[in-house]
Length: 204
Image (cartoon, rainbow, N blue to C red; front, side, top):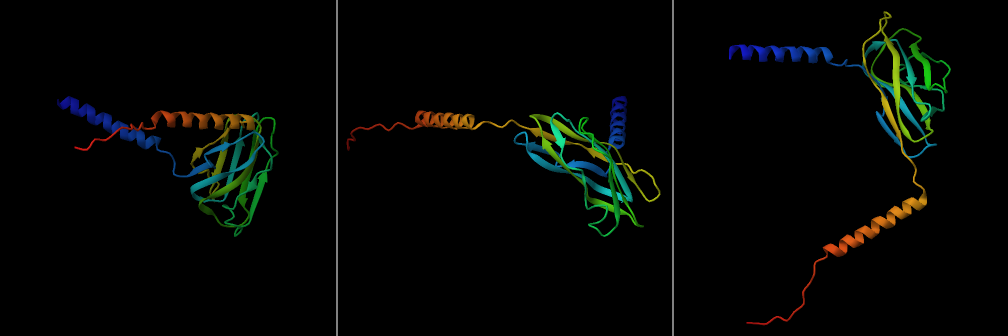
């Protein structure tokens, strides 16, 4: 019995240790919204590259990729307001030429051009895409870095964004589905309608 208890305690301690090791970093770099549904190919939409709970940094860098058969980036990424604190600090924003065929931005970076640091949460960049075809696609973040005032890279957790492009139903199909649904409701209503029996009531 004692050996069994010791074994259970050992497993419990090991599990706690593993949870501690696997715990994600509090700083998050993400595509928001995390999930986007587009109603039909041809639609244009925007997502944000965001940061949450950042320590003080002076520069960030990120690379973005997507499936070029499903999405196309239609505009050069735009700097978000976070690092400059809505223009209170001077920043430099650089985007390397977009690879439309491969579906990626090889690098975009933004850094402070004056003394100071920025911390907290906000939008790093604004990304504009157009849906090309029906399908699912990740907007991935890779090779990104957060630099503090001494040039050290800060640790963080990355969260991808997922885009789903659904097919657009032609008008005749929508009409047919509506009529079928209406007919089904009418049939079901007739089946469940209570039957009223008529008859003579005889008083006692």
